[in-house]
Image (tube, rainbow, N blue to C red; front, side, top):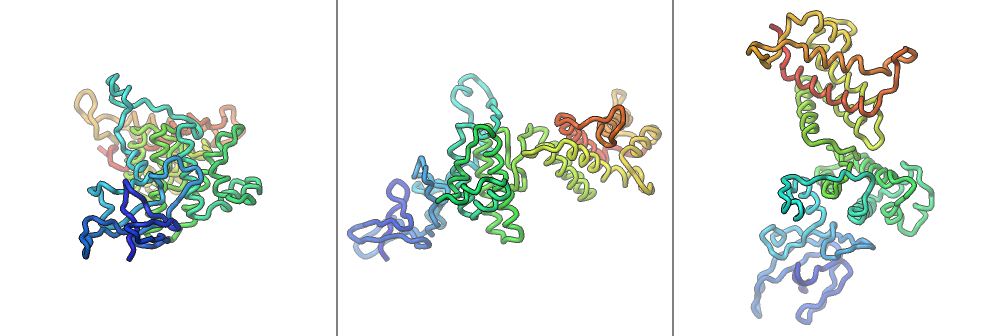
Length: 385
């Protein structure tokens, strides 16, 4: 077999490109094997073999040495090989947990970077976001589903390269439109892969991690959801950890509580927030764990009835945490939180003197209040005396 070429600091073979090595000419095609000569004599050669994947060449590629779609499998692609070809998708995935800080911050003694939490798609991540969109739209042939879902003008699909048109879409009058294209792309890919095999799902997850790395490294105010199917507004990491624990605790009692809490989070922090729905699902999450525990025989239990039961029966319950005397604390904090959550939903009924729409701030507060209550109730932090 003809030698393709060596890898890394020399030439990277791509489909349709011709290479010459020691007078032996060879043109790589998709699916061919790439050979790297490690050592050789006139009769023998020690080689490393890898599979050539379909390359992704962006029309605006700023750095041809780093292309998200080109990776090598096989012995020669391990992390110890100095000639490994780095993938930007893997790089940005690692950035999700990166502890890197810029030089000026380190010199100033800052232990944590100060995020900008930029809205929209700021200029400093415009190119990597555009490249990501182009690759995902083309890989999964998602131009039509995304354009139809967003009800975009037909000129996008009539263009010579609909993928590039969507990836380059930048409406100064509507800075959220770019985010909506990303959000719709994530959702369409997730929907298309329902019932797909493990390998396809892992590839999609890799793309989602790649995007999250770009957004995180670029201090975007938005993040990719845990299931990789949508964009969400970024939350403080400590609060997110509390939410995660509450979901796990709720799931240990009933899947319904975890589902409601996830839905409440999505409605509160999604690309298009729905404060009223977020507040409603937050209350349902608490009801899912509180009603069976405190009102097991009630025909129509509600969080309001749970509040009344605990308020009237304070002497029957206690907390696992101690008060200032060292005795188990009373449940005043629990009753206060439930009362806050129950009475704060001012759009439950219309026409009353105190009826009012739920604000975004109230919805976010309700979600985190519900997370605390779900966690406490599920973990047995409230117990009978």
